[in-house]
Image (spheres, rainbow, N blue to C red):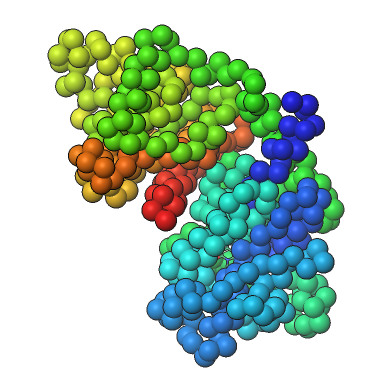
Length: 454
Ligand code: DC
């Protein structure tokens, strides 16, 4: 495919996120950027404002999680493009002006702090962005809503610049407010937004940091546009286009044959269905992060991916020389009781550095119920340290193979969207980034689990 055409196609599927504190210039930047790139614009803050407005209108207490949850679940929110500007519709009525009032601004942080409101909004935001081709803007769009976004931007600006901008924005809407009041409101909101328990404002790992204090809007947009086009161009050359070969998919004969047999077996006896193979069409090796519900997961995941992947297996499994030899052929790496020691870690790193894919189960142990357990970590470190892209994989039904066999259930493998760090990403706080990356993988798996239930 022609390079230009390839970039265009990638761009039309891209998700760009712009996060940052109030008044850092997100809205203007995001909507201008979307217009320039021909993408849609998603103003997530407007949705939290919509819930807040609906609550105030009914005289409800914004601090009450119960009322907020009820309102969030009962109203309909829609974002429409009106003459190049985004407008929020609440139950079919345009409330764009109302949601920008200082009263809504005052109460929006307490409302958006409620976990149940966030879950509801995130669901809507993801459904709006399902087909890609979007610039989303908010506080948690790169970390929680779209951890797999292709380009992430984090905007910052000093408090004075932000207050001045907000004043200008309000004036253009015919609302006048003193700079002191605006500054106070911004500071207060910053504090709540950054310290709340659910999805606090944080710079997502892999994001581009842009300080907008001394930049004009045009400079801001141009800087980000260039970054997005760079990513689109890189992705276009990484992508395996129809008719092209991908060397990363090469399988040794015995490996390919075994995967084929396992796949046919799983299809026949457990009605295995594989979703999301398109997420693998890149010339790249991966860290696959899968939930874990059965000992059968490594062969099931590998046959679904149809790739050679190294995986971790308990040391005891190698005691029987014959079996140990057999699984070694399939790239099993011995580990001590679910713990990854220094030696194992080094081994995994060396595999990743020589472009081999590795399958990991970040929960560390099997979940018999199929619920997602907490992550032990490790994935974030490995990805950041080696620059390897993470692909979340959600497996359903491997703990209920008997039900699958009896055709009461189905074995499902969902291959998720890649979580890719930019090649030149320099982390400012590695420990924080490891943790955030783990959370991002967890969040994506949770999304995949929820969506596979719908
Ligand atoms: O961007 P804004 O000022 O319109 O956002 C209004 C409020 O909504 C902000 O104080 C925090 C909240 N918000 C959020 O919690 N998460 C988002 N993704 C976007 C906004």
